[in-house]
Amino acid sequence: MQDFIFQNSTKIIFGKNKEVTVGEEALLFGKKLLLHYGGGSIKETGLYQKIIHSLHEQEIEIFELGGVKPNPRVSLVREGIALCREHSIGFILAVGGGSVIDSAKAIAIGATYEGDVWDFFDGKAEVTESLPIGVVLTIPAAGSESSSGTVITNEDGWYKRSTGHVSLRPRFAILNPELSYTLPPYQTACGITDMMAHILERYFTNEKNVELTDRLCEATLKTIINNAHIVLDDPTNYEARAEIMWAGTIAHNDLLSTGRIGDWGSHDIEHEISGIYDIAHGAGLAIIFPAWMKYVYKHDINRFAQFAHRVWDVEFDVNNLERTAKRGILKTEQFFRSIGLPVRLSEANISDEHFEEMAKKGTENGPLGNFVKLHEQDLIEIFELAK
Ligand code: NZQ
Ligand code: ZN
Image (cartoon, rainbow, N blue to C red; front, side, top):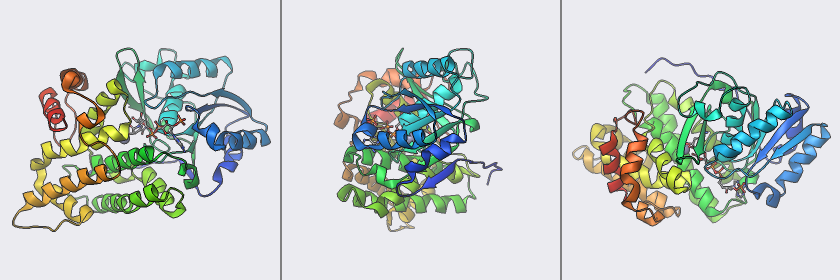
């Protein structure tokens, strides 16, 4: 096991109707805030009105910036930074999913920095501080509600890049599973795949003695798998929605990475796809993760066989570990398909036109992944497997 420091200070406020407490929580950070949200779902569901009411009750002055798109754009981030500077806003409240939260985080680092915010995403500057942010989560998926990272797309060249810092962990995150009842099935499925991918990225490690975190990963994966079809068949099933929402946070709050080095190659490859094709991150992962698994499993057949047996209940064939490993990969792919996601690029209408460009862009700062280092040609072969 590797040495580690684990610090996750996000205050999680979990349960029914908890969004009505947002005013009290926000007040701890001052009497003025930027309310940041997406394309309108919060107005349709009535959440927006509830948030405004709770903030008004605490006499908090509200500046608003809506319109965050999935795969959030740096141009809107720049607008948010300008608003924060103009009105001396010191706190950002993100109401939405990963895209809104990431956009809020990018505003939070840009508002305290003199240069252009993209500097943090293309490696020209390192984050050292940020404005505090708070979250009301509406879709369990990205785990951004307690992660230290943010992922932003630059329309100039369609680069999708990430940066991070401990100060970016939201100060509080309100998680009411009822808020996820209105999700379209496709978004529910994309969220499920993303949280599973966050665990798989951590699971496939070269570290040997990490039994506790292996088993925590397996338990979280099994919980997601057990509840996925329940929420898809019965979207207002509170208990199942609650399991999925909490799993999404646990998947990415870094507890499951303690003592081990994760891979993250599939995420980086997926960012190239959603950067160019603007598909949902979870859908991109449903396509790339099985292809990545097929490409790398021989690197550690034992680990893949363990995964197949413990997560998918595949019989552990001691005489044929490769068969066990391959059945686990097939089960993963079949599961993503069963929840309604594409598992091939062609199913998402993506041709081989940009394979070389994506492989080049993806590796321009060096090889991807840690479990197996992936170079430009490896990415092309993974795209071929995913065709
Ligand atoms: O924009 P609105 O109208 O709100 O609609 C959203 C959006 O269209 C809709 N939605 C959200 N909650 C809803 C709802 N519709 C009905 N009812 C609700 N309760 O869902 C759509 C997707 O929202 P989005 O925020 O894009 O989803 P998600 O949470 O999956 O976030 C994806 C983004 O997070 C990044 C991804 O790359 C992607 O850009 N990630 C961020 C990470 C992080 N910061 O730690 C880690 C992840 O690996 C990921 O890369
Ligand atoms: Zn992800």
